[in-house]
Length: 202
Image (cartoon, rainbow, N blue to C red; front, side, top):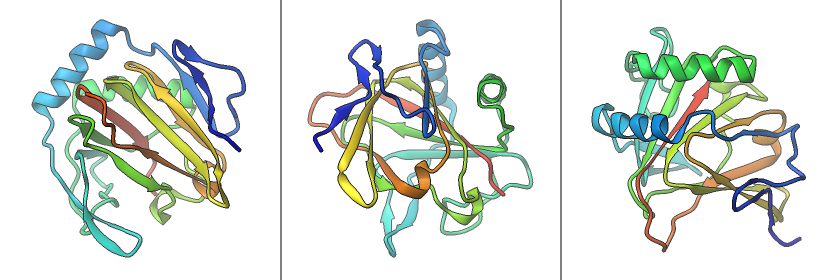
């Protein structure tokens, strides 16, 4: 099966599998998105972490920052580290996202893609700390990047979604069970992008 685009260049196209993904463009205006992008870049305590993927320890090709309720730990690290304290901006975004997602999140992982060399490899968010079928809300600010998904049992079945600045995407259902996703490196010039993924850590 050839790659299918779920979205036209200008936004969402027909055929989105709503049982797996929801896409809400323009959750934040262009002005709001640019303000939040610059604020997160300047003020977040960014780290380049070492994580375990496919039984190997790798350095993430992007910067991250973890915020959460006080009792929640950062399951994405090799060691349990205390979370950063919620900022007013993150709480504001979280409240808006929770209304749409219909769930209360207790943590958020910020990813800072500095240019086209920064990426995240094929993976599923299927850690035990997230539960079997987690709801994960993704908010993007800055450079449009393609969010690729492919079915685990058939890598030829794949989609590519353009994540626009100020947009919300909700991952749900069996997406983490049956599919993998990534943000690929790009040879094209890319401006900075900050992505927020709100999660429920059990």
